[in-house]
Length: 174
Ligand code: AP5
Image (cartoon, rainbow, N blue to C red; front, side, top):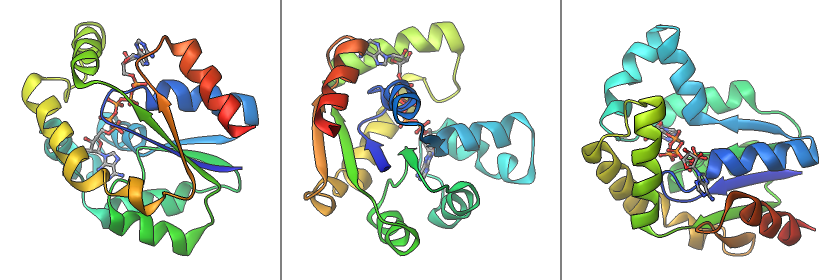
């Protein structure tokens, strides 16, 4: 199975992708996690993207595509990719996607969640300014993907407790 999970920042993409990957034995491919690993390991790529991520801006398509190409497997759930129409078109040349899950959440609830995570984990892009920028990037660059994938789209209410969101996704995938 080849899936994409998308949605606004902090909507629960990573949380749900882990559950779905386990259930269907898929590789969980998170471009955000890949980039954070590069930063933690202080690689050349990590140094290049650190400031961009901290500001909540999007990293260039060519960098992201290289990372995805290196890690793509046969069965996967992509989390945080594609994020632009350009990335989606490039992905079409690499593989076929079965379903696209979009988590729909209210901004107020997400901001509360991210404030909670900022206190616990201190992720560098969980500052009020970067969160606002991430929402802007989502609305401008990523939202058009909903129309791009309209024939494969599953929209799930992400405002529910974690287990209920998982249940709804699994029911829709059956
Ligand atoms: P990325 O890591 O993808 O960040 P994001 O989209 O902003 O999403 P988050 O990781 O913040 O949240 P999430 O939706 O995964 O939610 P989570 O499960 O963590 O990208 C980071 C940056 O990398 C980008 O800004 C960009 O710079 C760069 N980047 C990455 N991919 C790129 C690409 N393709 N192109 C260009 N640049 C790219 O949950 C959030 C919190 O809420 C957690 O604390 C969790 O425990 C909690 N939570 C989750 N679900 C629930 C629930 N149902 N109820 C209560 N709490 C919940």
